[in-house]
Length: 326
Ligand code: DGY
Image 1 (spheres, rainbow, N blue to C red):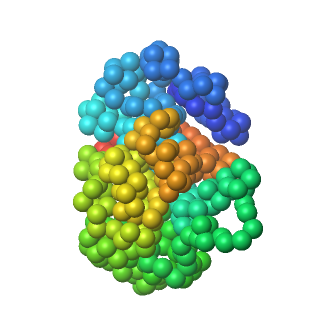
Image 2 (image 1 turned 30 degrees about the vertical axis):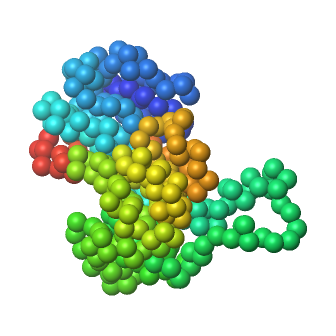
Image 3 (image 1 turned 90 degrees about the vertical axis):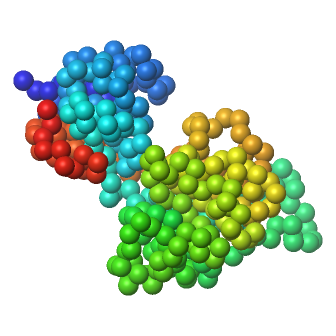
């Protein structure tokens, strides 16, 4: 008998077709996200869940006694309670490796938007505020030839570094748990301490995953060390930054500007951030291109089908030592 799975997000037709060749499935078809209660109700007899962002915790696992695999359509997996999943022998997979270029592209969109104040300039024109004469009020900062500091040099970090080095002639500094000698050799990236990076960089890009240890990784103390002309970018997860400290830093001119794709609360509705001119925000769209989201859904579907057939691919690193699914 083919395994039964539940798909909690809308997926492209070709991905659904692939799934239909391997599994019995039920899917959530609305643009409105599935409620927690409805999701839990759908899980009683399923062995697989294809999802993104849903909290996979004790409560959900209790409602899904036959569950073997949760396949995330994202690289981030801070929605997984790893301990609870391991206890119940439920495997977690994600989609690393294919989305780095898309996130790096958006990172540079945010850097340029913040440095050259592009959204603010656009708004000025729309509101009829473009006047002949002195344009000093429109001045921004150069990006090319400046120092790019990357905190968290993984695959996405490397793509950001490559764009900085080759596209914008930037000097690349990085801080990471481990040295990346390939990046040092090919891009001339320089490994340094966090403090050195914060003090020297003109553009700081935060790319660390959210874990128990990285909550509020960048806070008041770190912002204080940045140059008053620094641009700070977060494209990882909102909780890695102390948002109140960031708001205070931006409002008091402690740094020049910020570009943010991720926030403590998502969707962001009311926040001090929305009142500031020197912040550019996007609604967590690092991977949101037609092609990339479709590729991610397909990879996640393949991860799920493989896991249900007893093979493994793209298992999250904390579960690498697990020998088999239950
Ligand atoms: C990811 O893949 O983790 C992106 O942030 C989209 O959720």
